[in-house]
Length: 479
Image 1 (cartoon, rainbow, N blue to C red):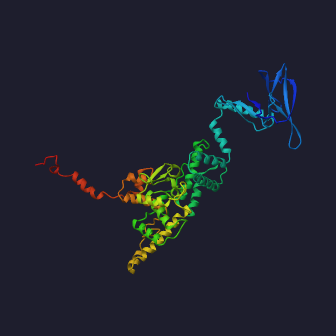
Image 2: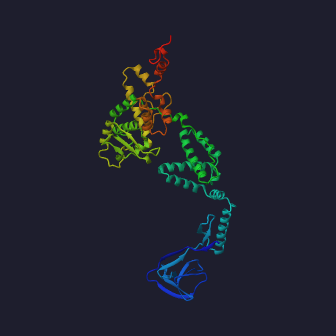
Image 3: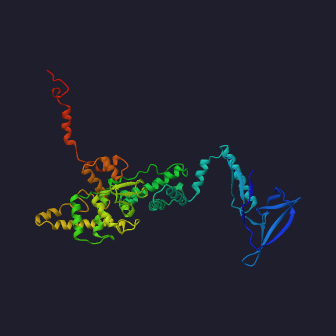
């Protein structure tokens, strides 16, 4: 049977309060234990008093409030604690699993509270016998909640799994963009057609495929979470496909050629201008580190001095799991020449200070392109013959975009790391490890065409296996 009570709060009795004692008959329903009666008064407050015969002692503390008014507060049987009850009634009932549930009815009217409590217990019996489908009931409850509550719960769930605050903020922003575009107020209104329409609008505005893919990933991960956690019956976006960023030529990145790198170093040494809060020499160090380690812009921008291990063993950079894209720790090795340059560069820096004084991570690509343009001008001036200079000017050497439409941005330095490793003959597993690719397939897709070919010698090796029996050292020649 569902019962009602009010949550009673105990606070120390005010110092200096006037204590009033009185006796009255033990209330009906009171429980007497060891000479102390416990009962609920008409306000729902749980009281206690010392019993003598059929009488119980009640205690009150009289105080004066800040407004100069007199207030009487009930005390427990010790006289040391004042007792106050919540305004709303609490219900106590047994749920479908047999557990005793206690929760607020959120009403001060006792009759209404009793009806609510009886309904809860009645529904529990229906769930116990299978008349009410608990999953359907849960889905209906979630369907009634505003979509903003679900988004907040999803972001909180993602926070419990790790990752960065910046990534969660971007995910939330993407989800809310689709919510506003679709005019969704409840999660049951999420519609694949509205998502597809918004994607079409982004395409019409010439949005990059990688940008669209990122936004779709956010909204699709949200709806998958809703379905997995029984907030939606099915995932409404399970059939929505993300665009292939590799098909978007705006994001085809080209590697930096070794000869191009030499001209960039020469240009920065001859024209040592500060850019993006970094000197020319610091930018050379930054570019070298990016090419040699394959670290991303964010990893370099957030790289602290104490993650450079330069003074013992093999010099390397430590990348914590929180700062890497695949959430796995990594060690990126450095050659001794670069390690010595970095050691001098950070000699006076605090252990937690950033290795590179990058003013804005967003300006790294633009800064590299300006340095690239300066190097190209210097390279063109190196031609004394006019015809040679005209032919050189028509080439894509040191150009931001090559003749195949691939661009050079700061992330291209990471691509350069993998490309140069492949061209140098490094084993594909070595390239995968340094680039921190999740699979060897990704490594081969990106750099397979750059590994030194062995096809030229394949015919000779097969021919050796097809040699005449008489030429085989272990078989006799035929007559």
